[in-house]
Length: 117
Length: 217
Image (cartoon, rainbow over all chains, first blue to last red):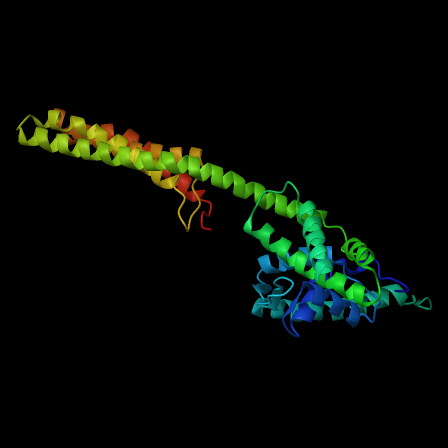
C-alpha cells in the first residue's frame, strides 16, 4: 500500500467517507470496505472494525438506515441506505472539509512574509 | 461443498467466540449475522487470489482490525437488556398484584362508605372507610407506573413510590377535609386540615413531574 495516511489524520472523516459511498447507492459492509479501498487507489484501507462501529453510530444518529437483503446462499447481507439527514450531513461535511483543506494548506505550506516593515 | 461447510462453521465459531460471554440482544444477533456474512465473502475473495482456506481465513480475520469497541458496545446492550427483563418480570407480577389489591381496596372503601351513608349514620362516621380509597389510590399509582408496556419502560421503583406517596397525600388531604369538615361542620376546619397534606402532595408531584425522564421505547 506504499505510504499510508495516519489514522489520526483520517479519523474525523470516517463518517463522511462512508456517507460519500452510500450517497452513490445502497451497499453492505464488505462492499463498502472494498469501495473505499478502490476510491483511494489502494492507498487507504478503512478497517472493518471501524466501519461497523461507524455504521452503528450513523444509524443511531439517523444518517443511515439499514435493511436486510434477501440472499439465501451464504447468509443475509445487511444493507445500508443514506437518509435525508445523512445527505445533508454529507454536504455540510464536504463544505467544511473544503474550507479546512484550504486553511490547512496555507498553515502547513505557507511561507511567512519577512519584508514587512 | 464439504469444504464450504467447514468454513461456515469456522467463521461462525470465530464470531461466536469473539462475543463469548456477551449478553444476548437483538442487536448482537444481527451484528453477528452481518459480520459472518461479510467475513465469508472476504475469505472467498482471498481464496480466489490463490490463498488456501486456512491462510485466507487467517488473513481475513486479522485484517478486520480491533473489534473490542464493538464487543464492549454489545456487552453494554446485553447487560441492559438482561437487567430489564429480570426487572420487568419481577415487578410485572408485583404490579399486577398491586393493581388488583388497589382496585379491591377502592371498591371496598367506596361500598362501605355508601353503605354507612344509607344506614343514615352521622356523616362523620360515614367518611371513615373512605381511607381505603386513599390507600387503594396510592397502590394503583405505584402499580401502574412500575408496569412495563409495549411502548414504555417501567418506572424506577423509588420514583414510582414517590409518585404513589404524592397521590396518597393528595387523596388523604381530601379524606381529611371531608372527615374533619363533617365532624366540626365548619368549612374552615376542613380547609385548614386539608391544606398541609394537599400542599405537601402537590409539591412532591410537581417536583417529580419537572424531573420526568422519557420512558418511551
